[in-house]
Length: 259
Image (cartoon, rainbow, N blue to C red; front, side, top):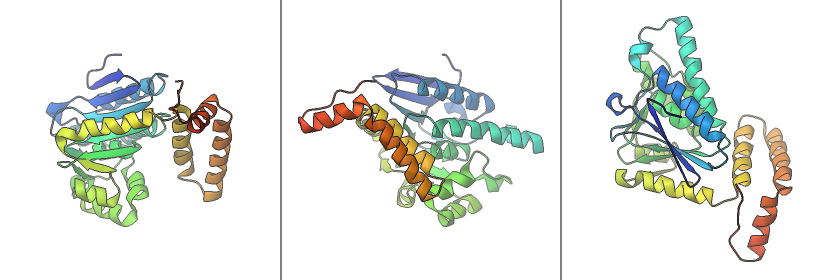
């Protein structure tokens, strides 16, 4: 499938999805949001894909936010529609059965940070700047930022970012737990790819069910989350993948996974 604003490259089980609007700092207009939704739907359903990396084209930005020219003209109904459109994409990313890793270089602001928040793992370059500056425009985050950021880093730090609108640097993001690691810009994609390849070396069904256990259990009481884990543990225990993995361990050899 060909897109105007999004690139998709699949090789050896790894899909790289790139927001490709570098002259606009990869800003999310309605077309780009729709294309990203289609791209994630496509690769998430591809049995040959085990891990997805999300990044942005060019050197200046991962995604610098939503298209302000569109936001400036919206009213109540348009605002709700625009928010729902962006949230639909974030939900698709979050609920993908495949792990999604964000490679963040340059600006990840507004909708760009919200895009990264929907991913499972986030990695930043030393030059990354991350923030939710919507209040400086007389707006609030609308693509899930008010909900995902506090759940990830805590209400206090999240409110400081949201209410001031000030961006933070990569080291601060690492300290807050907003990103998993920080790398030099020239090394970022290679390092994220190495993490993706390590995940690809693990049992594919186990990876899918482990992500499902965490995602499904995140917003329910502990007792319910434990029941979810028990159910999924039972499911993986009935698979040939589990038998191959445990046999390989006992036989001191590498497992041979089927995708």
